[in-house]
Length: 238
Image (cartoon, rainbow, N blue to C red; front, top):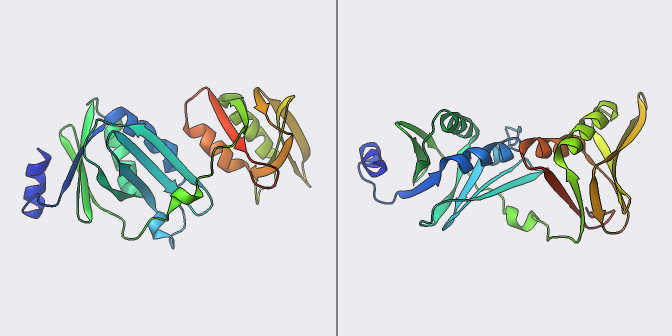
């Protein structure tokens, strides 16, 4: 019983927040955000994953100051729990525990600056990250009408080939979207340039832009869906 465990650790369960989480959706959501955790030691408040638990909803958020990743999923209906910052090592250990069991649900408890997960017959305890996670909601752009829909695996493969030629310092790749389709290109002074089409469709005015190929590849590699969508505002405000 999580309440009993909390009582043993802190003398009483008063003030603790309890929740039941589905194991498989949680395990699936972790790699979808894990790669975006900052590698900058000075940004300690970004060195982990923010978990938000609503009534029937679960959201994981990670950011590194240059990119923001949000993974939404569902959970059993229950009380809303205050958002918590899970340290990087806690996230990695939790993913390992979830992968090594076949239980359907996981018990989660937050108490002050401590938290723990009960996974089967094992418990993972940790301190939370001190600090305030940025107000990321205002950084999420509004939905756009101009969208490219591409097959994920060919898109990822094309990105990786383009980055073999791209400048190693920035790994920039070009994206050209038109009614005729989508293409990915890259160039460098040493290796020349390359371009190839990607299976998919695009609805909107012709758009050409440059993006960090690693960021796009990380995202495409972290999900398992058949297609990915890229929404664009215009050439200057993707």
